[in-house]
Structures are given as C-alpha cells and as structure tokens.
Image (tube, rainbow, N blue to C red; front, side, top):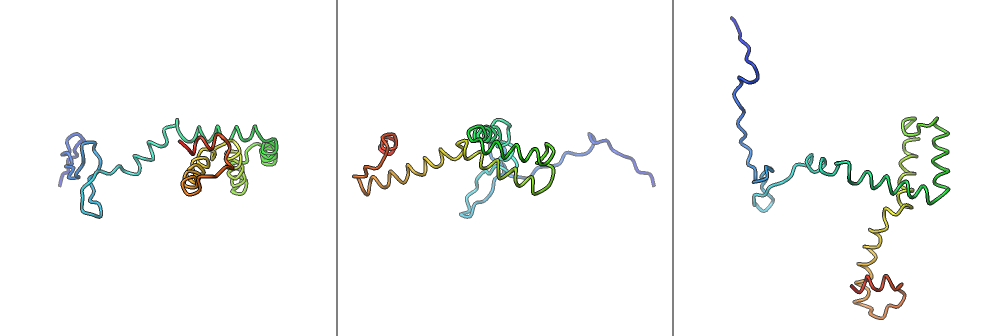
Amino acid sequence: MTTESLSLDELPAAIDMTRRDQWGRYMILDPLGNCAGYTRVTTVAGALDTGGGLAPWKSTMTAVGMMLRRGLRAQWEALVAEFDGDPWYHSEESKAACKRLVEECCKVGGASDRAEIGTSLHTLTTSRRTRPGCSQLASRSSRDASS
C-alpha cells in the first residue's frame, strides 16, 4: 500500500461553527438565556500587558517611594549586598523579600493614594448627608465632598 502525503495548502479548510458577534467575540448564553458576546480571558490579559500600563506605573511608584524614604533605600542596598547583586534569583526567600519591599516602596510612592482618597470621599459624601454639620474636614476635602 502506498501513501501519498499532502502539503498543508492542499488540506481542506476547517469549518468554524462557532457563533460570533460583529467583533469576532464568542457568543455565549448567559444565565438568563440571552446570547451575548464575550471577550476571551487571554485577549483581556494581552490588552492589560501592553507595556504602557500598570507595570511601568508600579515601577515608577516603587522608585518614588524608595527615593522618598532613606530607610527603604537602605533595605534595597542591604538586599543587593547580601545576595551578590541579585536578590530576585538567589532564593525564594530573597525573592519574597524583594516583593515585600516593592509593595512597601510602592505604597510610600503614592500607589494607593487615589484609591484611599476615593474611598474616603464616598464616606465623606454619605456622612455629610446624614450629619451636615461635620466641621473636621480640611478645606480641600470639604470642597471635594461637596462637588
């Protein structure tokens, strides 16, 4: 028996039976039975990791925090010295120390400021409705809560 091989170009095209919306997203039935287009998780992950988003921002917040607090800079210097210039790859423990220090530097650099301000403004807005005579606010916070 002889077999002949086919080139990839000679193979018949696969037929895609997947229902898609006008943007090429998969059509999925939601719990109520409605059909809706959904973006794949890998597509969302790719969109978040474009190189111009969260990673450079967090790096900036970390560097700012390290520059603002001499103690944080000293901790980085000690880590680098202790692990011959490469604390990230030395061990799981040294990597965990790097991660903790990045988070602390990031917080000092202002990474959570906007979230904390937003949460506080929600609370202030609610408090001003229930207790309008609240006078302990700084003028800027008072203006923000009023708007």
